Amino acid sequence: MKKITVLMGREVKAYFTSPLAYLVLTSLLVVSGLDFYLMVSAMNGVEVSIGAPFSPFFGGFIFYWFFMLVVPPVLTMRLLAEEVKSNTIETLMTAPVSDTQVVLAKYFSSLLLFMFLWLPTIVYVLYLGVYTDLDSGPILSGYLGTMLLGAMFLAAGLFASSLTSNQVVAAVLGFTLCSSLFSIGLMEYLQPSQSGVWSYFNLHAYMLDFGKGVVDTRPIVYTLSTAMFFLFASIKALEKRRWS
Amino acid sequence: MPDLMVNKNEELIRTEKLTRRFGSKVAVDSLDISISRGEIVGFLGPNGAGKTTTLRMLTCFLPPSSGKAFVAGFNCFTQGMKVREQIGYMPEAVPLYPEMRVKEYLKYRARLKGVGRAKIKSTVDNIVQQCGLADVLNRIVGQLSRGYRQRLGLADALVKDPSILVLDEPTVGLDPNQVRETRALIRELGKDHTVILSTHILPEVEVLCTRVLIINEGKLVAQGTPSELGSVSSGKNVIEGLLQYGDTNQVNQVKEVMSKLPGEPGVDVFEKGDGIGFVIEVARERDVRPEIFKLCVQKGWVLIGMRQKQGSLEDVFARLTTSEDVEETHDDDQGDSSE
Image (cartoon, rainbow over all chains, first blue to last red; front, side, top):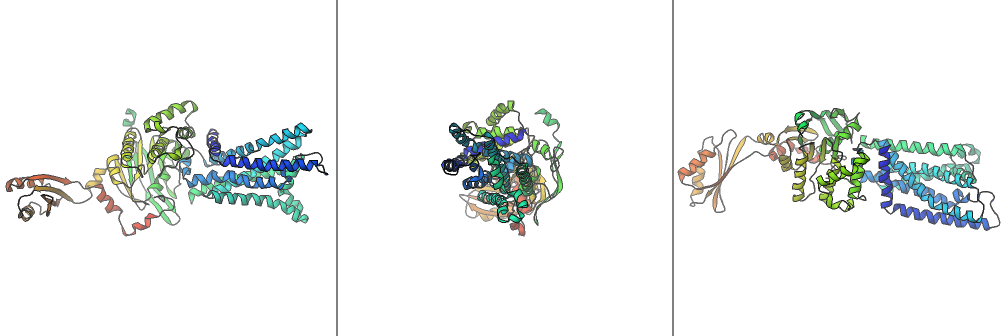
């Protein structure tokens, strides 16, 4: 555990010594600012949404998904690919640390950064809270859902990074994995006859639920187990690199 | 370090039929080596001979395809963590994180290798002293010169004070002054560490190592001290000398007289600058230098210089590692690819 925190310390610092963290942070603020603007405009319109004003902010708008599908692979693309590319993997893996420790440390540092990115959006909540009474439940569950999805997408992105030594390839592969995970669920809308099966994978519907304050165990189990699968696969990919 | 002297012959590293394949290519082929505490061992071989692959297996970076390796009694494959704690490893080309600062990097590596929080400062300060990094402590690693990168790599390898140092091509890409400094540092470290270094630079092992292992195409082809290996290089003693120039006839005269030396030597005489040079080859067991001197006195020639050439490691190396298919060993997808 101590080794993991030491490794995480380096990873998190590395995010902030490159322009990446600032770039992603800025883009999230632009996207979420736009979301917020649209949300407030919608509330001023004829059809006033009832109950959960933040529901569109979490998953209702296309911009949210744009951000959720692009940012995790960008955050994770560097993590393992760069170590292999610059051969620092050799100094890393000959220090007394295990493959599992390395993968977990890199994963949790990306998750930590992802959480940090969403921190400034709390301003919107506070701002709206000044003008109207807000129900905190749907907002908290909205953040919970976002973090769960992030946890899953980041694990997929890390797996992509473990497969290649090229960061761009890792990012594209990660994006493909994330958007596949997202698209599978959309089959529910295309194949209503089979909707029962597809609904288990429907991240879009899950997020709409989270935005309304519905916390179901299905999305929690689905996202966390998928994340664990990808982490396991990343560890195996790292081990396999040495055998080939 | 007196306690090290006591255990000097304790075996620290042993491999048994250590083999590593990359696809169909055999990079390391049934290697059996044994290294004792306190040795400075040079791994010598042409590029692609399997040096890096062997070192990577000893440092637990690569698992062997078959065979076993033991470091300080721990199996490299099944007790990797224990082995890694014993070894300080500086990989070829010294991979470092370019965005970190020197001090920050050393602290991070020390913590990663399990140096306690309370000891970090003194550990890092010591290592900075030892490796001469004090001037660049706050510099960004990516902006360091080649020489400092090498020192930082060495500092990283040393930071937990490991009993074994494994250095892969430690002087590659350095300028002559830096090479000299690095060698001095390695020699210093050799006093209380067991050092394994790989190189394809022959003088390096001659000046640094107590023992040399020559490997070619993944196989151990020779081992011994540099002078032991040098003496097996050729069956001949070669004597070079220079006489002061007399008259034009002297060249032929010298040749004629020297050919009559005992042991039927091969003689070559030639004009060299304003003197007359000669090269004499005789059988190894014979030293004809006293005879040559007496002969010169007798003939009234002025002998300016004379020396007997030692068989060099270079000869052994060339003889052992040159073969028709040596070209094939040059590309090694995992091994020495960066050369």
